[in-house]
Length: 308
Image 1 (cartoon, one colour):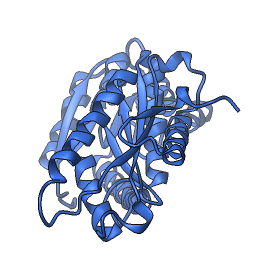
Image 2 (tube, rainbow, N blue to C red):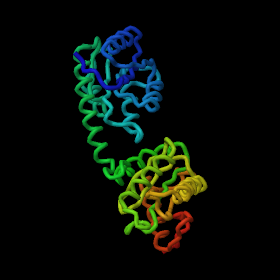
Image 3 (cartoon, one colour):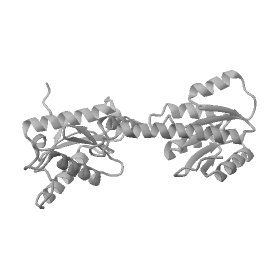
Image 4 (cartoon, rainbow, N blue to C red):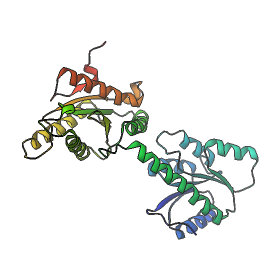
């Protein structure tokens, strides 16, 4: 009845009723879903933010925080994906006003108990197909075909997500921008496309799991680096420089002769007053200034730029 997914689909159930929660959990697991079940709204909110479930089923009458409140909090969280289907369930008949409040909070469906599990499964599969289609569309538009890295649009998308977390947690946030010297005509006779491919691999290899490397066009790369201050940005650029220096002595490589580098780093993003996308723009401005002044080999911070 239910299509088997290429990976387990995680369903988070928050239900105050032990029997109802267990019965739905049992049916979902028998249909190849992975289920996590909790009994309070606060716990559901915390797990939804940390585990990124594929579907949420929330009881409207949860202890500490009702399902509609949880739904509204998630929709207001910039790090939560609004394409995740959320079902609100209710143990008793409710007024149209309550139903309207659930939909206004961002719920995809509102169901009365006892649940019609057959219908629930069909709706879940329909919603998940729509979500997968959206994810595929997003991936196509957020990636750069030439390098396989995120595009400028993709970097802006991730800057918004990572910046929101840095703002909330009072964390550092940085963006590093690099380009090969003499990139527009190639370096030492090397084709520019081969040089870009080499640098894309270097950015991927030396980025941490939490970093987001991207290609912004015109032979320029940018790497979003959460929880990274100015010293960390300089160290990251230093690793890239040392890799290039090491590889430049090898024969038949597409290593550029040198790098121009610029960055923007904030030690506590919550005090910066900046839009997260501005971190990318400022790193690009620092890189552009580094190119114009010929300061290759030394990373240039946006804060070092002359005030116009």
